[in-house]
Length: 343
Image 1 (spheres, rainbow, N blue to C red):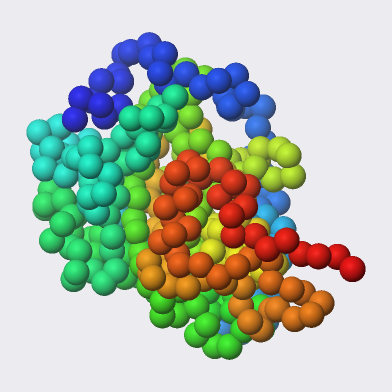
Image 2 (cartoon, rainbow, N blue to C red):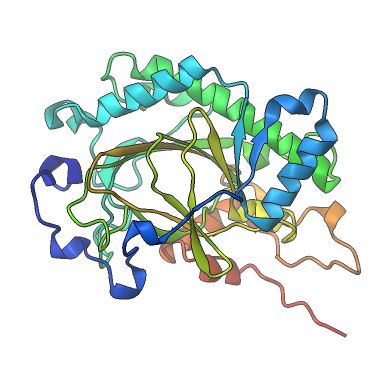
């Protein structure tokens, strides 16, 4: 428990093992613009302008690998309650959080700090996190925190809503790619892992990171963030800030969707910066294939002119090598790429 940043960080200098090498430091946050170009997609319009919304999603997934959705059908009250109960969890006394804290990274529900590679990483990340599986809720809810008393009820309802929303978005994506209806349902989107992140105020945000530059290994991620800036996307050689919008979800394309789409879509690197003024809380929902699912480029997207760019593999095999390579994009994908011969 004493490792948790929130346990010791107030009124402290930045410890040496939280200072990043010069080339990885975020520097002054003011030099990174909040990007107004990252698309904001109004899902309510899908009921009468479905083709247009699908096109917006396809364009955003190709160009940015990121977009935000508003009017998404998840109740604003539930979104607010979920963020509140998660913040309440992180601000409880250490003694109350101790039952879910663990240094064992194989434990499915655990509170920890920095990353699963804490013992081997050169620089620690300025965050505490709680992660646990969520689907189906009834299989996992008994592992979740018992305090705050409303945590299980609220987060349980939220995780069901977010999963439904992700399946709606995946249906629009499969239609846009020309795949059969329900293509992503079943094994490809079977798992939902929730990671709630708590970034306490940091004494020197220019030297530290909440999360390093990485791409997500899963299929698709839905992120709920407070209206506090902290998410940055690495696009075409430069960092861009993602505007925090009230009651919106940031959607980003994971490696598996880049692979299934045969690189029509891109999984884009991103990071979390910290600030010195206030704590920031985010809730990431990772939609993933089940461990034994065979992932490969969709057959409908592959032909003589567009050969498959990746070999088939079991998702658990990918995940293992992704963790070993600490999420670095090119090295994570390299082992699964097929060399395409140009005639």
